[in-house]
Structure formats: structure tokens, C-alpha cells
Image (cartoon, rainbow, N blue to C red; front, side, top):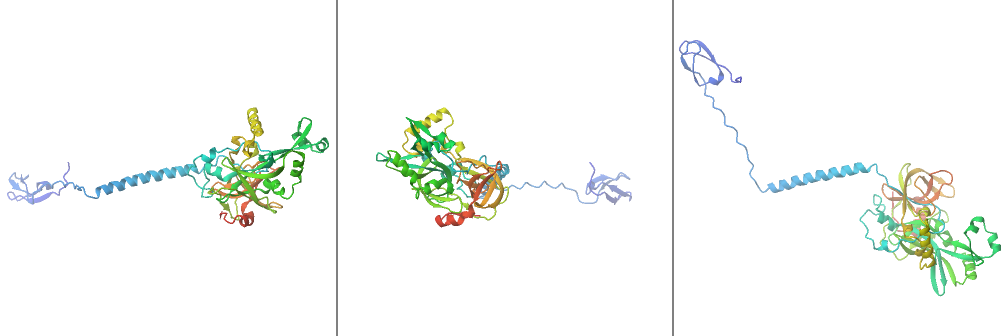
Length: 420
């Protein structure tokens, strides 16, 4: 090992010669390398310094506090990391399906979901328009099926019907188009022409049951208030004592009576009030003047293609229920009142003559979904009312931009909530 001490130079007292010794000999006795005489090397003897003592911090009242703070920091880091991972994974996730809109759809084909939904517990989840798409149960309580049918009085009791049957003679039958003739039924030599109700979709905008739908969904019911000729003739030809058109709204599988509040004369829009409800989840409406291309949207509603009896077993069940129907719900299968959702994106927003401001998008709109909401999936805000399916371009669907009917909605529903 090489010494790092400086060499010591001094003169030997015996031979008077210059002597050089290693620095570690300072203050020690040694022999002169020149003459061999015992000499004492000048300087102070080197003493090895003691090792520094380890400083030990004694326990104090702060120790538990420091431990608790450390544990909270570790937990906080772990939670933050989890949130960042979840956010990163969600960016590429889109809504699975989304359904909505379309022409008011022909004859109904299934039963309302019954009271099961009424007693089901509602999971915690964001309200419509709270910054994200709500959960399924919240949507089920705020997107409804509109049912247009009949109240028929016979034998002193009122019966709800989705369709009525008008007796006609052979001359009247001959004047019908081929499609109408195929719908007729022959029984004991009597020809019966069905006068069918229809279904559509709607969405809730106030807690006390104001909903928005299309004008064409409720048009027949609305016109019957002033034009009763058809139903008057039906009463004359049958044993019933009275007949009138009626409207119901099914929310989460439960059917409620409703009434028409307003039907627009300019746009395909109408306001309905569902009776006897309060505390419903509601949708916020977009008042933004601009809706950019490629914004992701979803249609919500009850397309006729997703309802009805398809198998022989389903048809048998429906026939049995209809024959013994006690209410409008008995004309539907239980599965018919599950909403459908379809996803897509905005293609273009433009003004069309006779239609107003229209959103052209790729989220599916089918017959029976008319009046359902077109929702921005990013924040759960309604951008439009689903209305048309294009007969020209494939995968092209049209919805009325909701802010274009803001004036009419505000006139009849003053407490609707509008956001950007």
C-alpha cells in the first residue's frame, strides 16, 4: 500500500548527514540510514482518528406521523398510475352500438317489459348530459317508445288496442291497393280491414315527463282530434259505442298514458307530456350553432326491425296475448321494450328545403326509431332528433338539429336545459 504522507527530511545528529524517511515515521524512533545511530524523527506522532459515531435519531412523537404520510404518498402514486392507465386504454374505446330514428313504424309487435323495470334498482351513473354517456338503466328511463293506438268502449268498459278492424264490402275492397288488400282478413264471408296504430321513439327533457319526438310519429293521433270521420264510421259498422285514438309512452318497460302538447307546423317535431311522473332522468340539449364533421354520435330508440314476433313460438305467444289483451302492453312481447343503440359519426350539417337544419350522419336510423335522440357520445348531450333514412345513399341517416327547434321547445317546455 503506498503511503500518502509527505516524506520527512532532517539532519542526523550523529553524522550530520541529510536523512529522508517516510512521513508515517514522524515523531517515532528509528535508525539513521547513513550511520545506523538511533534517532528520533522530528514531528508529532500520528494517532489514528477514531471512527465517527453513527448518529441515531431517537424516536419521537413525529415518527407515527411520518409513517402515515409515507403510506399515503405510496397509495396516492398507485391510484394515480391506475387512473392514467385506465384513461389511456379508454381513448380507443367507442360505444358498442347506438340506435335511433326513422319513420314511424307500422304495426307494433311485442309487449312492454312489464313492472320488472319498475322495481329494479338503479345503478349509480352519470345523468344524461353530465359529461359522459349514462349507464343503460338511466337511458332506459329517459328514452321511450311512443305507442299510438286506440281506446275502444264496448259493453261499458274501455279497452286499449293497437289496431282496430273495420268491416268493409267487396266494392270497397276492390278499391284498395294491393298492399292493403293483403292485410285484410276474411272471416265468415265478412272482409275486415285493419286500421293500425304505430310506434316511434322519444326522449325525456324534464323531470316531470315532457318528451320530444317527431311530428309524424303522433300525426294520426293529432289529426283525429279534428277529423273523426274514420272512427265514427267504425262505430257505426261495429258493436262498439265509441272509439278514439290514444297515445302512450313506455319508459324502462313500463307503459304510461300521455298527451300531445304541441305539434310543429314547420318542423318534424312534437312535444308530449307523460302523465303522472316525476324525478325522471333528463337529457340536456345542445344549443351550439356548430357541429363539426367526424364528431362521434349515437342513435337511441326502438326500431321496428328489432321488435316483433319472428319465430312461430313468438307469434303464437303474441296471438294469445292479443286475444286476451287487457291493456296496450298485452300487444307486445317483453323483449320489445329494450332500447337499441347504434354508433356513427357526423358527415355534414346542412340546411334542406322543407326540413330545416339537418345532420347527415352514419349512426343507423330505422323505421320505428323516429323521434329518438341523436347523442354526442363524448358528453351525452342531444344534438338532434332522429327522423329520416336516406333512400339514395347507403349508410346515410338524417336527424333534425335540435337547436333549430329551440324556439318552439322553449315555448312549450320552458324548463328544458340547454348547453353548448
